Image 1 (tube, helix red, strand yellow):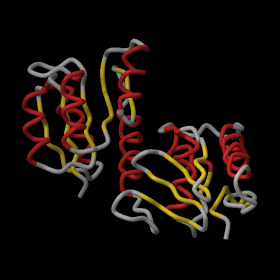
Image 2: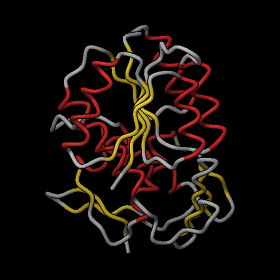
Image 3: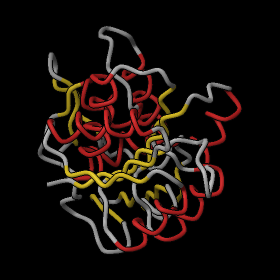
Image 4: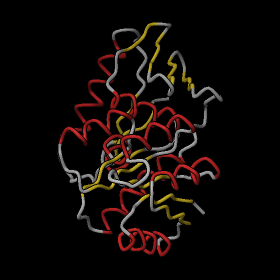
Length: 227
């Protein structure tokens, strides 16, 4: 059972989230201040953290880097602070997602499921340092770098996440929904060209260093790693 740490000082909201997550099959630890949350975080292992920003004891700005320094657990920020600067700061600092209050529980549960699924995807051909290899391709998930014949390929973070998803599961065909969930943390809205453009960009960048085709289009379904 996946364990989630809820950090929320509003008792009603904390219990509401916990009840919904428990009904969805998750185990929950409830913290009502930043200092209490840090104690739980140091002692136990969690699959995901849901964190408010405005907390007694340690506020979210102080708590977040302390948690990330201890261990790298996915964090979804759930906050009434809707300023763009705050969202950008938290996302660029390493938060996986940011949900603004008030929120709908089904959306929260969907975003939780996306992060749990991403964290549970174990690479089939990786080593303990977070490196994956396929043919002449090497990906390092710690530094977000891609090497082809020892040449570094400059991918964006989302391009890297898409390529890493395919390399981690070389036999699986991924739908556009799967790819969108992994790289955007959002619900895929249907026929837009975002995925196609990113796949095309990855192919072009890899082609600068090798003639090997790494991404195969499976018509009507999605994409997979080429054999």
